[in-house]
Each structure stands twice: as C-alpha cells, then as structure tokens.
Image (cartoon, rainbow, N blue to C red; front, side):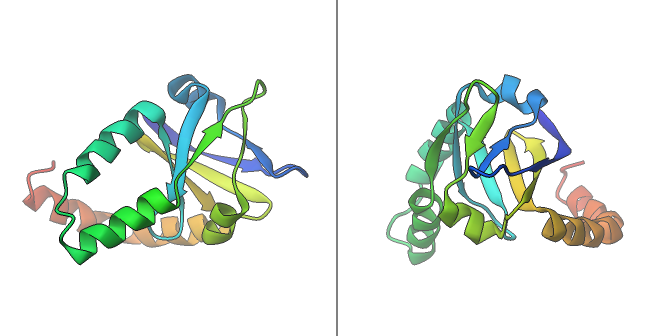
Length: 144
C-alpha cells in the first residue's frame, strides 16, 4: 500500500527521486499520466494494467468516456526508475502539474500522486477544513 507525503527536489537534469518507501512497491517501472485537480498520477505497472482493462470496458460510444480515455491514455508514459531511485518526468507532464523545482509525492492506496508543492499545500489546507463534511458524506455511501 502506498501511503505518506514526501517532498523532493528536481535536479538540474529534471530527475526526481521517488521516496524510498514507494520504490519497494513500484519496482523499476511505473506509468505516469495526467491526474485530477492538477496533479500527476503515477501507477505501478501492474495497477496500470488493471485500470487500463477497466477503462477498456467502458462504453466507447459515450463522448465522456472517449474524452476521459484520451485524457488518461494520451498523457501516459512509462517511466524507468534508475539505480538511484530517480525518474525523469517529461516536460509536458511537469508543465501540466506546474512542477518546477520541487515535487510532493502523495501515496494514495495503489497510486502515487505528484503535486506542485505550493498547490499541494493549498489543496491540503482546503481538504483539512472540509474533512468532517467529506467523512459524513462518505459514511452515507457505506464507505465507512
């Protein structure tokens, strides 16, 4: 399970180190793509295959399904983790997430999210304020 929050600096060759606790879970390759709320989603390859299969089952005659599939698959790229645990995030993904010199990695169960450090701080502050309301809504769905 991927959990925790880690801030890392991007080096002069645009590489960033994955948190060591995440490296054990993801292995030598992972898939990065556009995420939601302006972050990037990074998936272990086995998890990406499951998501890919599920998305492939969605009704391709629906415009919203086609659009979301294009968003997720069109932005996807395979990243190789080097011997020092670093990955090279392509420029188009860094631009999408506005990640310049620091990235924040968030473990979210079976995926990693990568955020611009300032944007993450703002988002986290908003969610902290709304946590009680969100928990109540989720409890009504039977999630808790």
